[in-house]
View 1 (cartoon, rainbow, N blue to C red):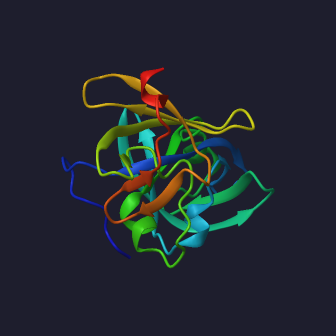
View 2: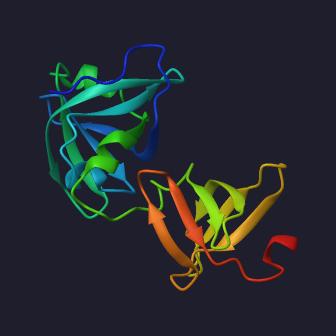
Amino acid sequence: MTAPKAAGATIDAFRIGRIGKPHGVRGEVSMQFSDDVFDRTDADYVFLKVDGLLVPFFIEEYRFRSDETVLMKFCDIDDADHARELTGCEVFFPRDYSADGADDRVTWAEIIGYSVVADDGRRVGTIKAVDDSTINILLDVVGDDGSEHLIPAVGDLIKDVDKGKKEIVMTIPDGLLNL
């Protein structure tokens, strides 16, 4: 097992889901997920947000219940009472694992925090959120000056995604940043 970063260190992770109710008496919990990155890489642990802090929980095993729910068993959580204490916790995935994964895909959840750079080299800003609630997915980008821009996440505009640099190179249509 690879240990997570030491206490007090900045944790670079992105949100992938939320813990639901306990399942059974062995300490399993249901987890609703928006990103199955934990299944596409060899991560030993995920972070749960407990009392405002990201705490590592080592994964013992999991199995899919549906396309959006997994039953997860964490090490040292061996009964329903301990599992119940995790109900409602947000689940985060360490970026280090997703960057090293064999899968080159980048998910919408994973790009939050990435820089957006115009294809002419100028920095546009940092992705604060991704609005995927409609058919037109929008990147909510905050500029260095504090300005906010909604940029369509259209395949024709995205020129390159560099997981190592945490950067997306895009063609920015004239006038888009002035809206």
